[in-house]
Amino acid sequence: MSTSPARLGLAYLCLAAAMAIVGAYVGFSKALVIVFPVFLLAGMRFAIAAVAMAPWLRRPANEPALDARGRRLVFLESFFGNFLFSICMLFGIRQSTALAAGVIMAALPAVVALLSWWLLRERVGVRVAAGIACAIAGIALVAFARDAEGELASGSLFGIALLVGAVTCEALYVVIGKKLSASMGPKRISALINLWGLVLVAPFALWQLQGFSPSFIPESSWWLLLAYSIAASVVTVWLWMTGLKHVPASSAGIFTVFLPVTAAAVGALFYGEEFTTAQAAAFALALVGVVLAAWPARRSTSIAAVLPSA
Image (tube, rainbow, N blue to C red):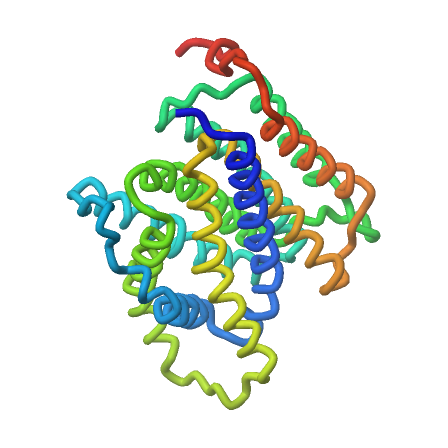
């Protein structure tokens, strides 16, 4: 069944907004990991969101009950997209900068498209492939940009490795989410995977709770934690799942370029991190990739046709 232009435009807006908010909280989480232990921070995030999304756990009357495959997908969606992504991202950004996180996260569209082609057998059109090429070109520009001292803005190798792990987890979250959104509503998906995230991180959070003194945490950090929790676990997941109902995962993956753009903007505007001309050009290329992917197109040649056969 075809999707109307108005509904498709709304789906694009949902996807863009979701990833822009993710980019913002990736950037602002730099301030949170300074004052909160990482596992405890993740645990509090999931706990706050679990309370906010409790009404979403109820299964709608028109939604089929989860079978064994559905339950497995929900667990994997949470394990990669909530638990592992949060841990890799929080530890990684503590070892790096918001700007470097934005650079690494820019790999998301290419990874998502590759996984969509491999796991979902989605045919990626030439227009989407061109968008992916723009994103990759942007990554190359940013990767070789140097700061005022002539150093690569890459952070520690350990931080880079963790952020690359976060990218892979987020790409799996996108692809698995496409499968889930075919049979479940976005609100219930959001609530279930958040609950699993809380279960997975709880033992580590309780371990770090020992010896933690909340009296030393400034009030502004608690408010930022609340905003981070609602944005990360409620708003972005709902927006993303809503958009995925009408957009192929390979095309939706291009919208993840909003994540590095926003994360880098937070680093530059709020943390005073250097924003070079090369980085500005890279993010411009990323946005061109979004336009190429979202622009209405007639039937296009699949990327599979231009890939070498195995």
